[in-house]
Image 1: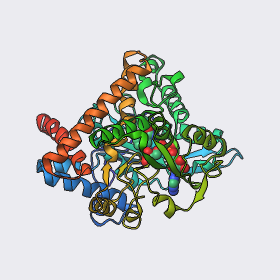
Image 2: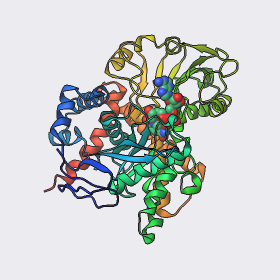
Image 3: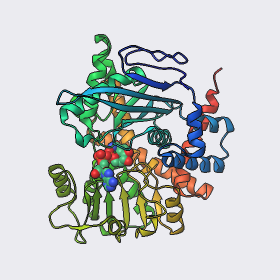
Image 4: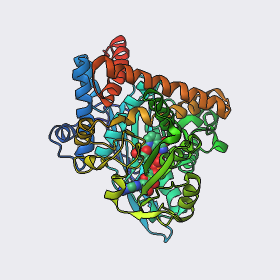
Length: 464
Ligand code: NAD
């Protein structure tokens, strides 16, 4: 069902379908839920229904526990808008390729939609729905005035030159048109996107604006390069937030971080920054894995040197002094904690029994599925859930957005100090909810988010 359709540069017009000859095709739903989508949700027949099903079941468990208002429950259990754009881009050899891009907006009760853009072959509407929904809970837990959104392009960026990536990105931004905006929906980096990608989106968006409006629209994306309006500390923010959570867990459990060992899956933005920021505490990184394979060293891997190696060679494999290990051996690493910082569904019924750790700090979104959660619980392994542990990125995105709106530029110490306060407060809220309701930390994190949203939505009521 298509309730409304929006093309690049045109105003959003709920309830009206617009077809423009010669312009990218866009299929979008504005304030409506199509029957196919409901069917996917109920039966799990979507192409990657398990990720979204995981979100729905996590939500239902927390909503039941907290006896969430029925109306609020109905609204939050569906996404608000879903946009799919099919657009062309010119390749270096002169040929044209078509791409499919997505933007899902889950909820905007607390503020503008906010969430990253991912470039990966596994990107599809179901994954993006799940990621958009997690963003709503994340912002609510750390109490920032944003809603939840996510997007991406189904593609393998390793296939493309920089020039091709730039043209793909610019055409995607143009196709999204007014479905993003500085006070409406603000993208940021995610898997396989970075500050450069955000700079291209910024430039494309501003180029479609009247000149008088350009300078007050720089906050249309966050995670920009510092030279293009980005914030100090945004690059490391998600890893920094993971480390603040690990510090809090260590205090609560009387653990001396300098005596701890850990391993990391994914050595991109989140994984590498987590490891680099744990190094000053004296914690030892004993294994790492990325899309090229896994490596281990009982003596420890130097996070700075490993980061340089990944930049130079494209992956962790071949790092001097490390032993290559297979995936199962990697997951079985004996350590104090594990930081998954790659993709979804890594800790499952098949893998959860392999883990030999006390705690998991989820840098990635959705690394643990429902069976994984159950097995970790039975085995007494603590989890600091994704919607708390990796919220540092969206917090500093919020700081960047504020700095752009106010034409300010904050020092790194100010950014880090404010980030720490948000994360430590969020951590305490989740810990308190876990003990008040006698539930696991993931359910507790949902409870914190749902109560915050319920308070707001009950006050505002429903139009008309
Ligand atoms: P990135 O693209 O910088 O890094 C992704 C890493 O995952 C790479 O090292 C890649 O090699 C690895 N990887 C990919 N497939 C893998 C596989 N099959 N097995 C093992 N490793 C694999 O992405 P990122 O920004 O670091 O994001 C990582 C996770 O953190 C994602 O779940 C993302 O949604 C989440 N996250 C990111 C941010 C952020 O600010 N970037 C914020 C919150 C959450």
